[in-house]
Length: 266
Image (cartoon, rainbow, N blue to C red; front, side, top):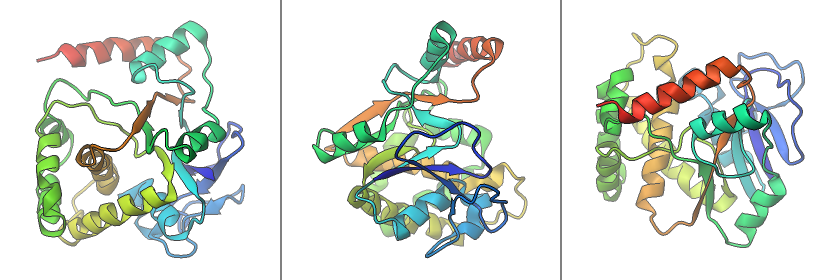
């Protein structure tokens, strides 16, 4: 049982027991600390610039033998409590100055006892616009169209959930972060990567900058939420995510103010 901590560089902060670092994009990223890598066994490490942390997720799907598994980032971890979204976390840090990563034992116990099926990031309101509008403001609309076409072709029963999610003002659990059983993850990954590989067949990223080339990581965040919405019977535990790089008080205050403006902006 482990939480894989996805990273593309050495991690400075010590990791708690049960948290295992994995270097992603290992075909081209240096590995001075000799972490486990995403380019062994069955893998898509070479696609890391387009798939981001999902090359780590693919490795977990195809190679991990753990009973329960999770995905965190080198600087993003699940807080020990659910106190709300990132703005709540900023306020907590401003007041207390500290945060604690939830123990892997707690996460595993929740899954083993069937108390929850998935532990995921507390949902965030991206802004006051529908999620479809929010995506195309920052990315390319055609990529959502290709994704819808792929779902229609491969999993048409998910199409209503996809449309409902993207055209609502619902919140979204970000970062592709989770903890669940390997069995649950395998089921989700088969669905997710079948869709993404189909989208990839119809995508031309030649004109995309480095940020926009991270397309399949961005799509994965949305699709994870579609999956959770579609499986409405799942018992989900939300946890606040904290960022170990959030140490500047002025920046945190600014984030809180901007977050409030986004919520009420029309």
